[in-house]
Length: 629
Image (cartoon, rainbow, N blue to C red; front, side):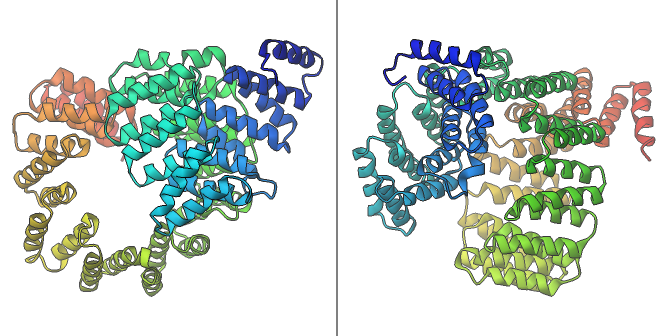
């Protein structure tokens, strides 16, 4: 292997594995040989086995994570690294790999934090210079970016390059990010890493054609790269090239028929293509049978059943998942969620208690526990869980917001106000704290106090659409005569604010002024012509106003957001309004099939049957609805 005689190395290690298949180091060495040969699927297979045989081996874990990253599966690489990231034995190399995995998933803040930890562990390493530069950048030292760039240029490794790319992307300095990626590519020839990062930047620049070219380059460099195949398949699905999307995974599955990421991706492609739910379920079950100890296919199967509103099947799948992999907090949390959906709050709370015990530092576990307690109307218990979450994340606005809501529900509005005002003491959470105070006051029907808090927030962030919407909503409730003047002034000062225009369209629609709602949506769409929600709403207003063009508008929304029941429903209604009943009814049947437990879709279908003169079919649908009570 050291001489790069991979053929001889492979023959030798296979001879060892024939007589000692459970010798962990032999599996690790086999994985290293396949990794060097670029046979990533085989490398992952050997290294996964090595890691199972030697769970304490950091070397096996590190090499497996490297192979998974090269194979384009950053999520699984993170899952491999996660158990050791907070341990005393963690190394800079392990932290650096985890940072790369977060970076590949677009989680730049998490990547930066790990790059800093990696650099701090080894003062003699060039990573120290990287950490110093990142810390200086965080403190606002502009010259530190030049230092990071110089380190990347001097260092033969890639840590500084990746950190530099990360920082440029985080700052949205995309031209500079592309230059940094070009430098990284010179150090990693023949790998998919640089083209994948370049594609991410090009997508941020709204250059999909260039991004596609970069992804094709990544796939050509590493045909078994899951990330490249998945991203290219997304392009194919957008273009309705479903067969092409499916074929993206052929090379991966030929090399590794059990590749869980590829198997799940195929199921997603078939679902996007409108395949029957039973076919998608079969694909997910095949992925599960091929990978019985892998959580992802089990989670996907549970989610599939939930999407089909088949709660009993989802509950069974979740219970089987926990039975098969009993110590996995993610699966336990999923079981708790399904139990809550099924209305079994006591069991859900019990399951979440196990999750919290396994992950005492998990904010998410406490949030989920609080959510179920709220659903069960155990408001005091929800407050307790959220207070624990807040102790773990004192500056997290979402946690404070949920805590205040629970305190209001528990009949403790003064505590909720105290929670909001505590946020206002910190500079970075002052505005959210004021907004939260307004929300608490509004919940108590203290409109004047709510308006005052929202106005105070807007004074601190005078260009915030979200806060302006709050002020306008409070004015409508408290000082309705002043609301139009506020809206007019806001739009004169912010003529490009499509979000506020959309808000005004919803206000107009709520009061039954469909012509005004249509006009506001037309204005907003001049600024955001490809916003599917705005297009969908506009199509519905056009139907109500009997305007021409509703079908074309709804079709565009469906092209931008395919297989979405609400958008499909609007298109069916628009088709019915134009008396294209056959097409409308066929489309609405698909809506019902996508979401069979939602009675609204059946009601629309019944109306379409009535309008088409098909009274018997309408009666069948209405009888089914009437039976629901």
